[in-house]
Length: 388
Image 1 (cartoon, rainbow, N blue to C red):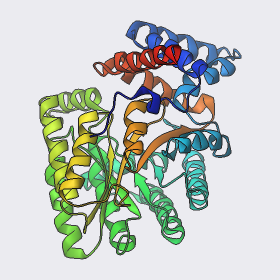
Image 2 (image 1 turned 60 degrees about the horizontal axis):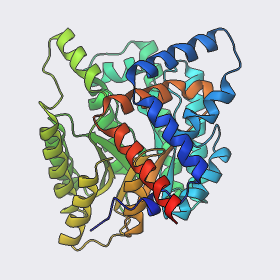
Image 3 (image 1 turned 180 degrees about the vertical axis):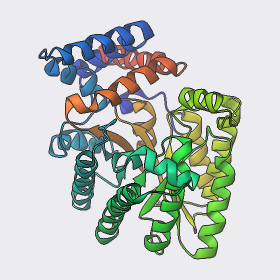
Image 4 (image 1 turned 30 degrees about the vertical axis):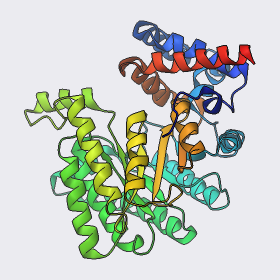
């Protein structure tokens, strides 16, 4: 059994000052009103060109991000490695829509892949589909709509960026994950993923798609993916998560009058997540998985199923992953038990990752028990250190 209550292991990489700063930050994030006020003040300060970068970088950026560049992330990679945890460098610049932005994201993604090849602390690359192409092109392709010449040219550039990412990933033998986004573009993303897996996942998983199990259709999609991988002779790499766009998805479904893609309740999400774990771990000959979760029960279940199926904890076909700055009690205790564990380590210029940071702060206030759990664990570790 993995002891998720062991705060000594969980916070071994953090100093007392680190813990005190984290405690203050999570206490602040516990109030939705405070979060919204801080968001408004930060955006206003940016519009007025006030010098707030230092404050942001020393607080919320420090908690949830690794640095402004790949090189700046190295100290955090080293600190994570002290606890047997690896890092997935995630260029977390969101909301950009110009071709120059897409090209910049492409080049940065390629940089992270090259960096991972020579860095044992970095097992994967990752990118968001809308980081390398406009969401409207994915949506049109997902709906099967005909593209005009300008749209077709833009889509060709999107495909070219995907191709460059996975060509390099295959050449350097660095697996790359495709992050999931909104349901209405996912059919296009899924088909692209299948195509690249058929090319590059014959011997080892290089391409990983993402399945959001808070969608009621994703378990069936995973079963279909397994059938396709088995029939076509490739490995279906997948990161399984619960999901992060619930309110947006439900609002859009109601507005446009289509069936809500989200599960009826959390119990249904948990049921499908567990079933997905069972499906994948029973079929590792044709699948590989990153278990993306901040749920202790899911990690414990993964460990139990690995024992059941005779899968070594250090099997390269199974990873557990959490976000940097959260759930250290899961990450470090799971790694201490021998599981392969990695943290998503966001990076990018402070100003450009603010949308990510605001989303992270808002999610902390909306996920029931998340902030309280973090505060309780940090407080317990500070108390333990007083006694030793």
